[in-house]
Image (cartoon, rainbow, N blue to C red; front, side):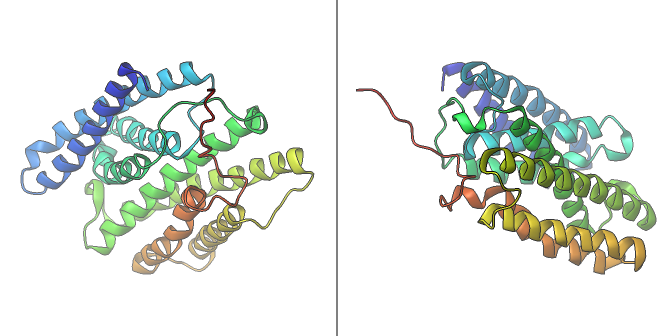
Length: 268
């Protein structure tokens, strides 16, 4: 990467780490909370500049390989925290999302960082649409998970009442589930365009189906069986491994057509 790209990445990484640190310290010093939100906004802006530079250099949206995917997903989390924070009710969203962003950044640093052109099979608008729904799904469901974790610890975020927090959770769940459904649908359609079949029982598609069924059961339970309280929160945590594997199992399991960490072939 260029000096500018490394600088933007470093500032973004540092901002996310600082946000996590401020989140921990603000438990004791509440006056630090506004600083944390400002840092999250800085991370969102700097992350956008860094990703825009990668887009310009590579000629495609930053979606190719584990490094770019974790970078972009972490930015999506911080950008969501910054946007949600415009409403005072959700000003503390940065505290819930910044730890996930830091984990993603740490994971992504293990992989190749050079921006590279897309392979021929990935040069399609359907891929961009597919990934857009993936980011929306990932952010919404991680936000849902964070709220459930806090509730299981006996704390209700955003200063809400029990009922208000459950209503917010259900909104996050619906957004994430709809986006997950559209991600699955667009991926299946593109699979048909490439391979002539809507479905292949390979690891990423299988894990995505498992996650979809899990969240579908939670939605059904909430709508028709009165699922709520701690049972709802434990159900959300139970599906989390399937969500994480859907997005990143291809990083460690190359025997799938979703594997994007293709080594560079340099001319000699």
